[in-house]
Image (cartoon, rainbow, N blue to C red; front, top):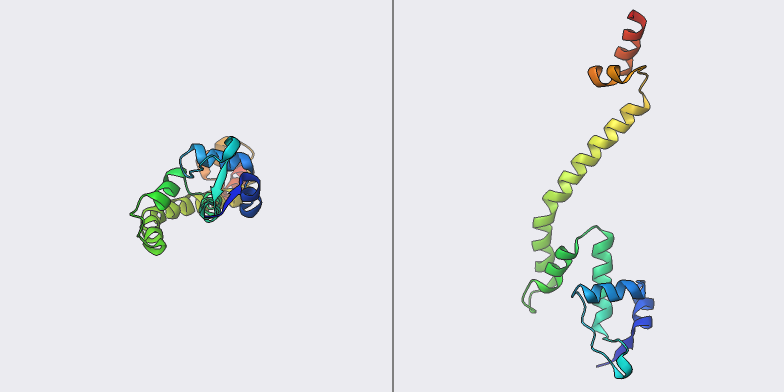
Length: 138
């Protein structure tokens, strides 16, 4: 089987050599040593690292990636692996979306804030018309 050096693997995957060494240290990638103790990779390491990179860019944890790559019998097709991970991960992503939506709404409300004190914001929910009316009444 063809082998390639770490520089070529880095070029093909878009990962830094230090990232490749990190994934190796984390057990996500095995690299037999060639002559002279240089790292040499089997050609399939490039595909594996591409999956790792894509999953990391999407926010998957190393634990999730380890499950995806090594948590099944070798004959389990990728579709089954992704479906398993999706069933576990979707509720987490939906919760993140709810939090993100709440943060967005709060920030948008903050852009409209006309409160003159923190007490107004806290007690009256930073609703600009109420805050303005309250200031005028005071």
